[in-house]
Image (tube, rainbow, N blue to C red; front, side, top):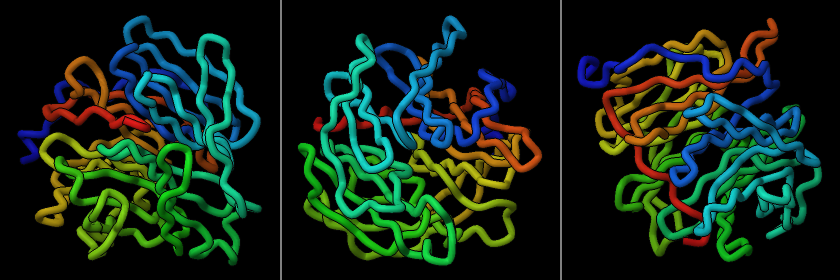
Length: 290
């Protein structure tokens, strides 16, 4: 399996930015660009891998996540509010603001095949009150249609090919959990498909490939691990020079390029965007409202 997944090329640093907390990368197939964010410095970044250019847009607060809607517009999660971004005019239009978010902010989020946006919340200050203070929201047509409580740092999200299984990471548990999806928004039959025990670091962002394997960014672990949820094994590891690996997403013309973001460490390294071409393909991201 290691040989089957062997990278086609070495890891490339696409943008050395020293972001404080780069996160939330997503591939825009139509425009052939990568979106990602710096949560702490509050920027939305746009990377063009063809022309090797990068631009950034400031936001008013913590921007944690980007998805695309049916019209290919960026949908941005900024602290407690979801916005539609008009790129041409750099105008943010509020879609929904979540109440009761004092001391909390959005974290990782993705859309499912039904057009729902699933997004987690967490305490901004990770103190003794942070445990289970967060939640996982399901948003559709700019309304909350489901909410699941008792998460601490809700992070990686992914679905199997037919959308019947939802995979999710709450970083502090060091586990990947799976849920059955019933009637599009109801999660049940929770079980753990993998526990990170001796591995360095903690699981953060996650994406899935066309074969149903989970690619997990390891905060503090200098790596991205590929986990087979059927066998509960790590079958491939990508070594990353930065300590805090935060997120990964498939992109490129053939969806065989894995884009990886990192955060700045205590030593001051990291906060960059990497890419690596793999011998496997991802799946195109689902759209909000589609």
